[in-house]
Image (cartoon, rainbow, N blue to C red):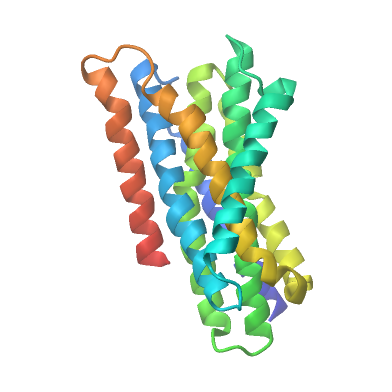
Length: 259
């Protein structure tokens, strides 16, 4: 039983790892247009994940309690936006400057947002496995189905951390490690929730919404402007927009089909 739970908890991290490993498929550093496509795709994935992976589940969970569902979703979302806004303004490493400072700010906020998104996903996995241990109707098969669905969703999320780093000259090994580490928080969150299920489950809607607010902030503040930067005429200008749509649709399909 415990070996099954251990394997189930690690499934989402496996998906993130596979996505991050996409950097090794590329034979050379992407050019400007490809970089815009990668950033646009990341923006689309994060927008869809914020809605279908975070906000809607938060509303559904809150609906099962005595709390009006709009309270945790709205409050958590605004706290997430405010948290990233505060980091953007206060932490020197994330301040916007030209050159390397701007790159660190963009990538640092992207990694932080996706990592924050992965924490409540790990907690959700911990909740269902805790329910399976307690004999809930979901059962072990249902818990594995959720873990597998999150693992598949994590494949593009791992890629959106690692691949946009390549155009900035980051070595492939280092880019892969950053993507992998962004997903390493999921099993940690799952184990903590298993151990403290009765305490952490009531606040999960707030945590999900907080992560959604953080992801939306980074998407609007950093990724979309970067995907649209430069020449606004021709194929290069439309590549970012089309990649945002592609990323959004892909993540939406994964969430709805595997949700």
